[in-house]
Image (cartoon, rainbow, N blue to C red; front, side):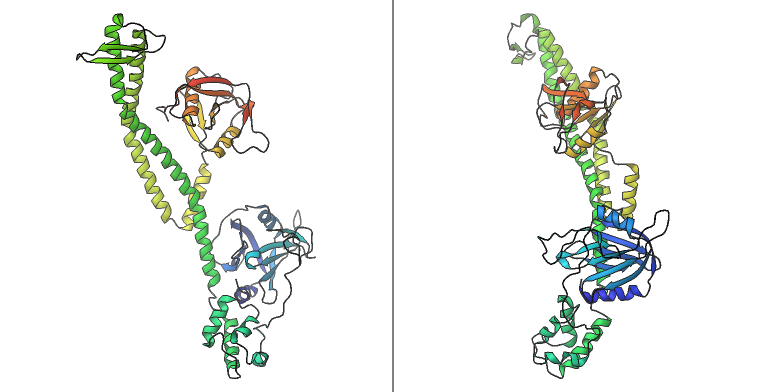
Length: 506
């Protein structure tokens, strides 16, 4: 942001000071906005590479997100007494009166350096000692000045340029015979964009040698530029861009939450369709069971039974090790019954799940069309409702079961669990942390198997059979120092062997 743009903003602001500060808001980690009584929002966007200063009406939102923003909120209080620009440089000083109360807040000075990639926001006391700043600058980075709490504030190095606000026609005489661009480069507060605007107003090429007849034309154009810089609405345009970025920042977590729900439902839908496809397997298992029951007395011991089906064709049937043909047939009937039950349930759930996915698609489309204000309301509604971390299910006996879907959720769920809850994890492979919320109450085997199968299914062992899953009380689980989120150690564990296949309830 160029010096004359800053001057134009401050010129409009100074006529309405002093003004009482009504509170800070922080739309993002690099933006602070102070609501001034009778003025509007003083917006300071202080993160490189495009700092911005502006005064805007409307309403901004956001809580403090960084330690420095919390310091601003606590120490910059009372009336804003003055706003002063260092020459026409990109450095602005804001003086705050402080507050008297149960705990007095001392007066402070806020320094805003809008210096491109070196932009910074610095809070000082009235003696110039730095109380805090957004980005400390060590001596290794800047030999001229070091910026950190406790040191006196040192402004950027001084320079000598012509001030276009007080410039007279005769002050331009030393540039006679030199290119017009050389004169412009010696003007304070005029950068690349204002250079282009000034050239447009004087209607001369940048390399035009200055003659005496050019000086009044250039001087007049400069005075008009000071009075009304080109793009004086630029701060509003910049704020519009800021609001667009804020809207996207609000929209992103809402969109990602809906996309996660959609992905989960799509995975369930795929499981339900696979359950339907396995009806043929259920039919085959029943047929094998019928044949084993019919020929049980004539089947010799061995891994395979070779019998004729009811159409006279020879069929090979795998036998379970250590089981008789009748016991193997009973196993086949049980598996067929489970597959048929899963298929029957899938027929009920597929239309419901497809409808839920369609509703999520519609909600995603609606989300993209929401305004910034509507997104704020939606975000507040979601926060008030409270985020749900992980999948939430119910065990056969009614215990709540939590399933982490990533390392962050694994870490949060394990920390949220009661010390007597049961913690499950597949043995030796990456996977979800599963919490069976018993809170010390005894859990029956069906509940333990339910949680163990969830841990197996939501792991790298998905699809395998006879997967070992360890479980222990949460109080025996801990995260080592400096370990990544979701990485834990545990003791006192027992092991269950389960199939890592989808459950009907998942």
